[in-house]
Image (cartoon, rainbow, N blue to C red):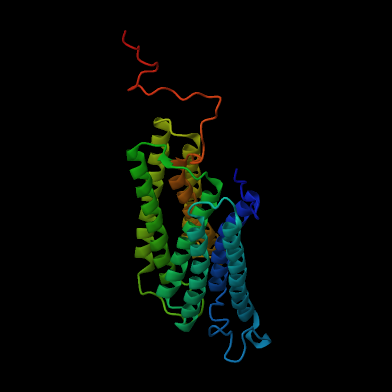
Length: 326
């Protein structure tokens, strides 16, 4: 009899590391926002060095240099967390199906983000590159969230738990949520918080693009309300109903912050909260998507019928020997 291979990593540690990736990637979005909102985007005016002579900030660069350099240091924290998660995934036994590509995607995504961040500085905070930087962060959250959910699920077959029409409505809601984020990036690129007084803007009319963003938000809220009511009506699993309701509440909170910041001339604190809210809306959207299916435990391919349990006779064969002719 083959003995099961002992895992070098506990399932609890694996889940905690996977969750830490989500938290860390949300945190760097917020701190990156703080860099821009304090006009510290060019606090370190070059990359990968902070100045032409030094990799670290200097006293002459003041608070802006310290803020920008501090955000750069957080990238190394993300790399450590993602690297530890990848090692934990590789060391865990039995190996969880699909976890290695997801963990590797998180590591490579963080490295890519560091490069995009460097390009952002090199292009003097061009709004298009800044926007790509934020969108890639949202993509990283997809990989991190998928990994966290995957290490908490069994390895069996994935099956839907809601009707096909509601799965389609869920995907439409996901697309609407992504559109809100992308257009929100365009709104930011047209607004006053450029990260530096000399940084260019994207040239879009702030009022027009803000109206488009608000219209998409109303669409998203309407879709979410419809999804929540439909899930209740068909008797969907409680976790799916809760996920849709949570998304709706997060959207409403984010909407309140958005309207208040717009009518109060975009104070930095509210803009920062709005960036955090964008991450929370996106994560809540992913939670709704994952709630529409579940994985069953994998069957053991080596399992055999115990000797004490007789094998049932085939329906095409007689269960007793045929009588011998006289």
